[in-house]
Length: 308
Image (cartoon, rainbow, N blue to C red; front, side, top):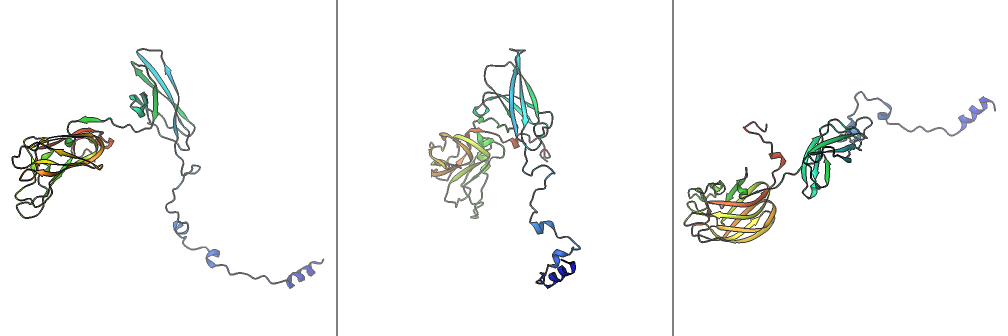
């Protein structure tokens, strides 16, 4: 068919209807819109080329071997530390060697730090010299947080930053409740003391609270009291974990209360049911138990600028 005839046929076909195209899609703006306003990606984590945003190291311990050439004086333990993840990890990882399972109280033999960065698929052999080795199963752990051991004490109330509060009292007879000198009940001095009936106590409750700086384990309290006309006689001892027990002290308002050891205690409270005529008091409240000092408190240093 001649070209002129084909063109003629096309011209006689149905006309092409052009739809309107928004100018915003056909023009280049003079100032680009903010990317996060268009794609709502302002919270998106930027990625390094070739590394997924969720990539992370995956550390493992394998191939634990022993060198017994110097036994019984010493033994060498070598563990292979590998990285099977998608991201490298820096040098200085702590590798801990235990005699016995650390999850059930195994003894920490020592710690050796890794010496180089481990990229995905790489490993390093870490060696530890064990002096005077003994019989038992050795466990190796990497990059773990070591939990501080429990420390037993006869008086948890003497832990730094422990504080106390007691029954409301009127300061100077002004009807204004005031928490007056409650710290004297935990200051460790048997010659000082706290009492709630200063001038006139308009608070009908009689209580004393001790607050600890971190969770502790408690198993008993001992109260001393030398005030003649005030003191706790009977009442309720409450712990912050919803544990309560009753107590009964002697006629001087002194005595001890023992109970099954309770853990995770951040405060305890004495509520007096029967008291001496002039309210409640105590020279000292001693709380027996144990505590595990948080890691953040171990290296506080000294002086005003030690933690700055």
